Image 1 (cartoon, rainbow, N blue to C red):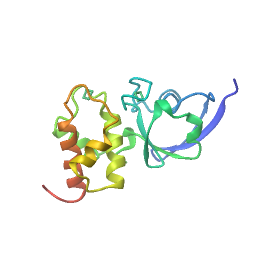
Image 2: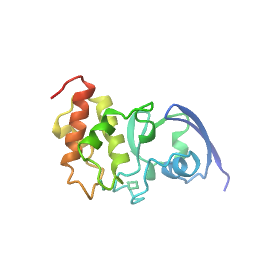
Image 3: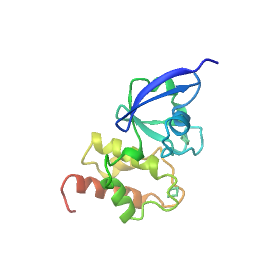
Image 4: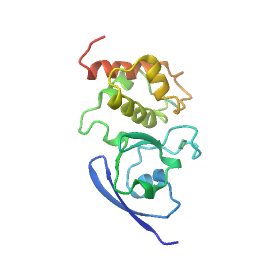
Length: 160
Ligand code: FES
Ligand code: FES
């Protein structure tokens, strides 16, 4: 089957790949875009490990056709901080032991970033809702929710 050319901005880098018409965005990013930060967990839309942002909205890479990303902006955990330092979310995940095995962390971080971009002062309920599609088998979720709230505080210049 003929490959389809797709171009997008991946974490500030203009990126072009050729994809199969039925290829999903997760495969295209990992195998052709050189970004291994979105994870393959279930491949069926249930775990959230493959979460990336497309034009600012969190989507499941395993359920998104790669060719629908043509001309769009894609953000992944790899580009979260935009520089050599950790993003506040990454820093707070690390300090708060919000990552144990870490497999869910890329998806969690992207889901959290999408939330804070839209809602810089979320409630605990907002955070819980925002990560409700992301499964974690290790942490019990509370350290993750706490880390996201702490990151929101830091980004807002608050210390509590
Ligand atoms: S790999 Fe996409 S939701 Fe699990
Ligand atoms: S830290 Fe292991 S799945 Fe979340």
